[in-house]
Image (cartoon, rainbow, N blue to C red; front, side):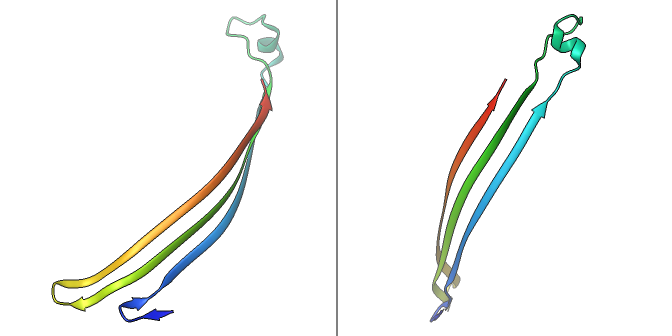
Length: 86
């Protein structure tokens, strides 16, 4: 949409992200018979859903002492979950 001061800008989007991680120690370390700290197997997952919106509204352009003036607002919503064991 073209406004008198320039085009209106709008962006919306969605992102799903999932990360898995795991650690499997050497059997000697896991048994506790090593000279280092004992470490047990562990794994986990992080997942997130995110939505975002951004709006840019040009207010004034090319007037005395103002090349370009706009109003910009943006927001992002994220819901994250973590699961796993140690």
